[in-house]
Length: 336
Image (cartoon, rainbow, N blue to C red):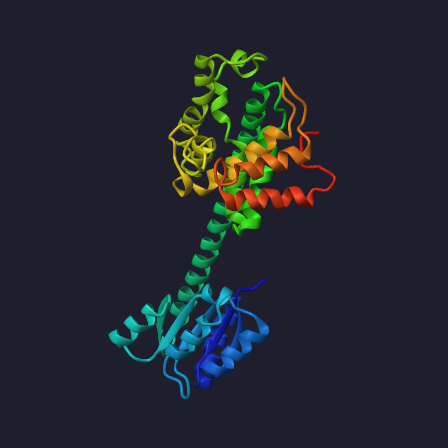
């Protein structure tokens, strides 16, 4: 498809000349005689590849036309504009460039100059768009790779504990739902989901014999378990693409009352995402099988969340979890 150029000039002779030169060089040309005609036209017909815009026009000059064009927003902000001028005026050039014009072409036109300038701008815009598309493609590929790595790591985490199959995925799901109900954006929901998936990554460094010990842990063994948030944060802190990943790992065992670990943070000093994951994590612990018990009845789980409200859990996020429990009439939010 031929590149589309709109030429806006109140002088019919200039319109004909520009149209003839550009059409002869394989471009589709639309000629319009005023700024208002141009604005009305693009609203109805869409946006060209480039606009040639005369500065000195009656009723609405080129500068005012460009300002109103950009106010249309969206794609109108991406269309390159070249000003046409008969004056060699530094002040006009400065103003035009400050408004976002990409180039100036002097009138009367020289055929080769006009063609080369317009072709250069169009090629430049096409290159920019191709680069943006390539960056977007690579970003998407990197995200998919990252998700694959996270998924593999999540499986490795859950495989450490015989009795918590699927724990990380469920915590991530519950945390995302709490965040959604609390008003998080889609991007923030995605981030907390990733944090939930990796909140227990530090358990990779805890011996299997300790994690899966059916009997009561010794004090030394419990200290090893309690070290997993620090170890997890250490593993995740170097992932520059998502710096908050370490937040969920380090502080999901803090308690709202300040009695948690590893840092004994209290109340809103605990990062918000970690407070959400803490509720999700505790809920899944109670609704999953353990070596020493089966899944707890829903009524007991609800009671435990209520009892922990304001002590173990942030009251706001505990209330959302209680709301989710109330809605879960068939008790589906649990390990299968």
